[in-house]
Image (cartoon, rainbow, N blue to C red; front, side, top):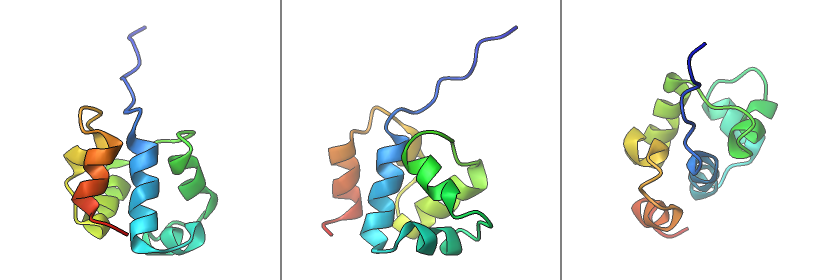
Length: 87
């Protein structure tokens, strides 16, 4: 069996920052993402589940940041926050 792909450790915090930047609740974010289950946003933000590429792309577009900045752990949460602007 092969090794599992490494997971971005900072992505959950970055997804939470995008939602806070948009000033929406988890259920509001689920609506924006057109998710049928609102609990998925919570799972994304707590690192229990990774969003697929299409959902990650939607987050990046809503936050007006690159997908790379969401998944790249070399970009700190503070640097990411600066990309989003102050909220």
